Amino acid sequence: MNRRTTVSGLLGLVTTLSLAAAQSAPTTPTPAVPAASTPAATPAPVASPAAAPTRTIPAANYVALGVYYYEQGQFDQAYVAYRAASEIDPRNTDALIGLGRAQVKLRLYSAGIETLKRLISVDSRNFDAYISLSQAFVQQYIGAGDRAAVSSNLGEALRILTDAEALAQTLTAGKNVALSRVWNERGYVYKLQGNATKAIEAFRQATTLNPDNSILLYNLGDMYYATGNIPQALDYLQQAVIVDPRDAYNRAYYAKLLALSGNVTAARPEAAQAARLAPKNAYAVGQYGVVSYLARDTATARSQLTQAVTLDPLRYPEFYYYLGRLNLDSGDLKTARENLTRAAALGSATPEYLYYLGLSYERGAGAVAPDRLKARENYEAALKLSPSYRVAQDGLNRVR
Image 1 (tube, helix red, strand yellow):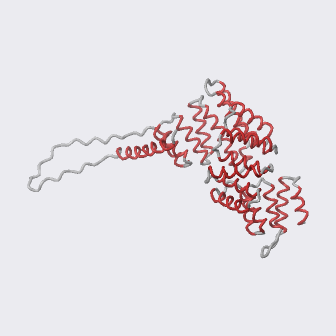
Image 2: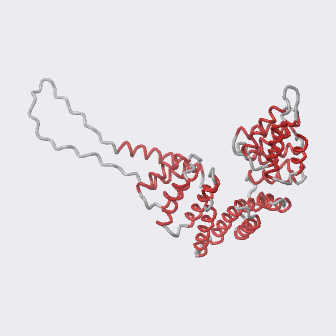
Image 3: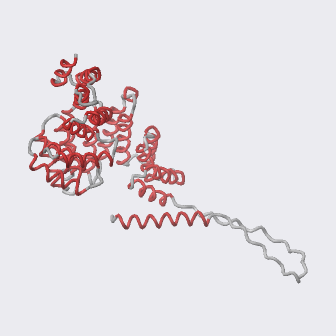
């Protein structure tokens, strides 16, 4: 659907909703003032004016408004619109799935799960409801401060996906696409469970069922990269770029993998193209910075990485890490420590961030003195995450 048409139509809907609200308010007639020369007469009995009719706004209008806000990323406003629709029509499936998804986006996980369960009780053949409910359990697990408290969520997500698969098998149209979605979600759950073999097999099954979907190809490539198989990762990321050449995210990731594999010459134009396609996309801009760093183009690296963390300050610890590496290379230890501290805080499970933070404290330059105690703490933390991390062990040996 043309986005411009959608926006103009929904802006008209906003106006319609406002007018309807105004028209539903009762009006009080202004009494006529008799002329001064006319003697007052005994008024005849007047029947009470009927209340102005209340105009009920259809639930579908609120659903359409919810869709608009959701697509714009305004999840709080989408939540209000979907909730209004579900209150007008408690069995409106579009309102319920929109409300459940908006609640999950707002981290109201328990409420979202209950809403989506209610949708399934209303419409047990709603395939999207099962997928969304599985995702809600996964997101609650990811967002939990204490994952032990929601340890059953991943198993529950897999159980729901089994129900979704059974439903997908009965479909006459779009069966393979539906099944690919089930396998894709399974792959993500297996990845969170730490079962790389099952995750790869699930993502492979998804791409077999739906080979022209760039997101599925990306997920499989990403899983191969996570297991250290860069050639296979590159193969699937390249396929993702071919399938959807205007997807900046896929292209940026492909560029980074090219650079990490040593093919910086091919990586640089891919990274630059990704940043041109989406200049406000922090990931695309930041990966252009990463590739530029690996290509030893420090000016472009610093510019792109700084822009990326400005666009999205909390999502990508990798970009603070490479900024910290740039600072270390130039001897700016104070700024290096600041950026590497941010990287280690946002990406606390990545030993490399902790190692380089330790290295920044081990070194001293000018007015910035070395801090061997903090260096040791970070080397030890890196080794706790990865006991075989040799350079961290070497660093710890130096500062003991």
